[in-house]
Amino acid sequence: MIINIMITKIIIMQFYNRQKELELMELLDQGKPSFLVITGKRRVGKTELIKQFTGNRKALYLFVDSNKSIDILMDEFDRLLKEKLDLPDYIKVDEPENFLKFVTSYDRDLIIAIDEFQRFRKVYPSFITQLQRYWDMKPDNCRVFLIVSGSSIGMIRKIFIEEQAPLFKRADNILTIKPFTVPETFEMLDDMGIKDPEEKLNLYFLFGGTIYYYRLFEKYQCTGFDDALEKLIFSEFAPLKNEVRDILIEEFGKEHSTYYEIISAISQGRCSMSEISDLTHVSSSSLSSYFYDLIDLLGVVEHRIPVMDRPEKSKRGRYFLKDNFFRFYGRFVYPVYSQYMAGNYSPMLGKVRKEWQSYTGKIFEDIVRELLVEKMISDYPDIGSWWNRKGDEIDILGVDHQGKKVLAIEVKNKELDESEAREILELTLDKTKLVRGISGQKLKVGIVARKVKGRKHLEGDGFPVWELEELIP
Image (cartoon, rainbow, N blue to C red; front, side, top):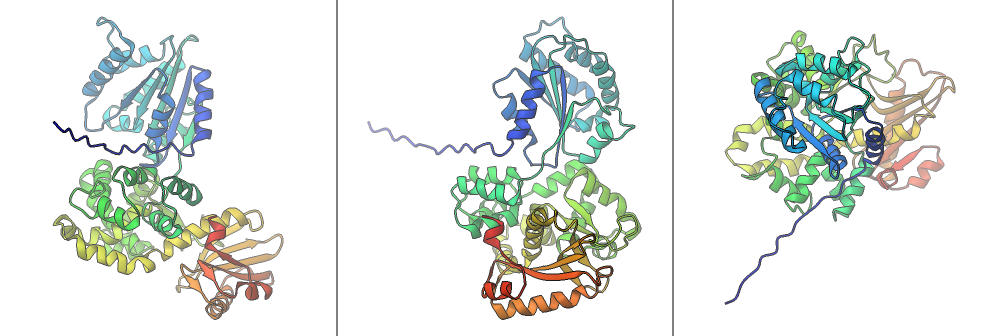
């Protein structure tokens, strides 16, 4: 008899770039009792960080499901705690106060991680104030390392950071986990076997620095950008098919469709209150609360003002999506959602490929701005984008008032020949005349592109030039 054995490729993705966070957690673990808060937007790897740290330690992971009552949650916590610690039946920790009293007085080494902790504000707000009381009263022999994490950044701030917060100054430290930077993402993709810089850039345009999506990329054995589009988004069983919709429903319930509309409007280039209102059913006067949720709770939108404006007085603020996948979904999926759910993927994929170069122009600007600001902030303390009400824009404007110098930079997501570059530089120079407050200062204009032919000639004439490969080695 011949036996055929199928060998399945098992993919185990490395744990990347959280060494400093792990070192802090190790330090707090050694100094128990300790209390750590971990926050950051969804999918950035908070839970993975906890799992990585607790892997070979005695630890209990608890998840706060906002769809469950406090009684059901406590029954669940009671069962898990008894299983982990092999507790006798007569010990009852199935009520919030009993649970908190037990864990804050436990005298043996134990890590307790409570994920999506901020949901207690909805499920059972008293849990938070009870934790304050029991943590304050814990005995000296307590050996618990309490870790709480949450994706609703604004809620975590209300619980732990604001002066009137119930757990203000109770945590030993607050870790904000950020998405990976472009260089970090490129390094990870290189380790995953994606060597082509263009493929790496397109994947970053699609997923940003959100680690969860790259885990799916490996799990579904994607070979590159096009393969990821088809396997992860545009197919019947695509794991990201309802990603944005599910997140919005989980956070905002019945109102999720309104947030969907706002995200789609911003992803289509509507950046001001009035423009977003025109493309949604929400009046300008009612948008503020939605923006609070998208900025402070979900962390996928940001509000920017022109670099020369004073934050407290500026009326030229704009809204931008800082999550690349939300931006993609709002641009290419939401406007044709019925077609998407019907499985008519081919024309949608065609639209993505046709518009990709123009669509990614703004994301390319964001990437370059982030990388250049890091390099230039010491020379130009005021740095960012500039625009006026008439539609004139300068991609990056750096100003050093003390040194009386200004640098204006235009960013292009393409290769340029020398004549194209000179024309762009001339236009940028003209736009600087519209900026108030910089007259009489030493002015330079520069350019960033994927490649610039005649670069040496331009630099010889005093124009700073950057190419993509030097910003992302």
